[in-house]
Length: 258
Ligand SMILES: [Zn+2]
Image (tube, rainbow, N blue to C red):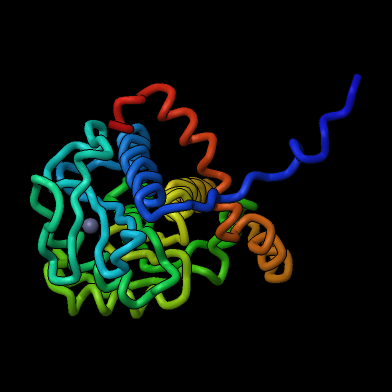
């Protein structure tokens, strides 16, 4: 048996782009694919939920899903571009006010963040009602160990940017926040990363709800939780974890790229 060349064994890294147009196209395609994935995972709840991607040229503008369109139907060409005042500057659909109120402030507070994801997924919102952080119960949950925050202040639907500012302040430098009585919010340096954190965080909420219900789970100790976070909780790993999902959804639903 001949060995594979060393080059083919290297872990892929996010692509670099020659033009801003190429980068925008890439982000919009990942964003549309992510809505299809959210639909597959059952993260839709009527018209709630949004994922945003910062525009690569206009840093205070972001791409987001059209308000009221089901995640399973969204194509790259359906995404709308929203400016820092909340006006739709490209696209034919309105923006969800809560999407603007939360995401515009998170993008403003965190220049390192390219994408942010939020939905009313079942396990995320069930766990959020407990008003506590995730424990390091499993290898996967360690991605969030000392890297997520609790926004412990529910005051109705988020309709104004002052509440978005408070959520951004609670998020701090972390990759995720649990919005109490509401759901999860995750961020990333790529769309892929932010969406992967959302998916795996919802699953970690599910796992902890099951484990806490069944008995007294054993927590991973501090040193090993930190070590594991360094192994599976980086931006690059988050991006890489998304790649099989991208291949799966684009092979099954190629119309999302239109
Ligand atoms: Zn919400």
